Image 1: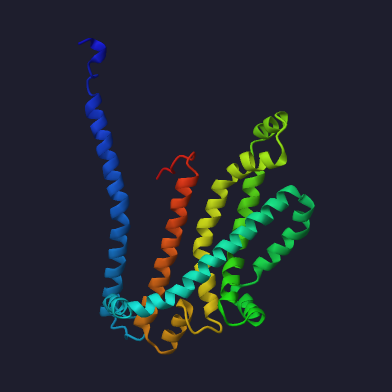
Image 2: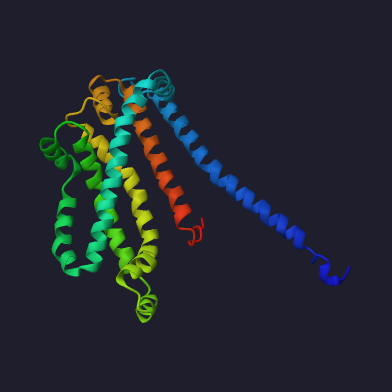
Length: 275
């Protein structure tokens, strides 16, 4: 065996130490959030017990967990319409934002004319938009979907316009030298460049779409997470109220994680962020 085939002294030990450090870091990233959640629940239970808070004001975590189990079918049946409204509004709002951003990038005069209008509409609070949409669209799912779509539209539009416009000038010049058409420049350069910006907006929209659907259900709805929150509040059923909020929050987190997974599958050329 030649000297070149022999392992260098300390290389195996250094590699093993590196892998052990990576394993510890992964375990730390998993355990710390769990420890934070358990610590929060312990503090919550302790405060309710020590301060003798009445159950109709703030229930204990055990009471909320009990309602999550006993009322699980009721919670899931009310989650279903909210999920449909949020996902449909998410899709419609983001598709409209991507199309509008594409038009704005290629037609600057339209961007200058209508972007201020979009900004003004975005400044209107969601609770003010909801009654107007209910009057226009009725008490079905349509106004809730519209609210979820509107609340998703603006962040995606802003990020998509920025992503489509922030292409490398040298890459743009190269595409023009190669006589690339506007369509080729869009799909092979602009769109690829905008994907990180787009997914940043989509992760925000994943949470805000659920909020929009719930807010829409507060006005003129008898089913859904928002309607159940109102019913539990007026009945002073705080355990059910907290359980409903937790279910809605869990769905929002799962929606966010789904978009994060899609980003990892689509945007594969970006290195993972360091922590």
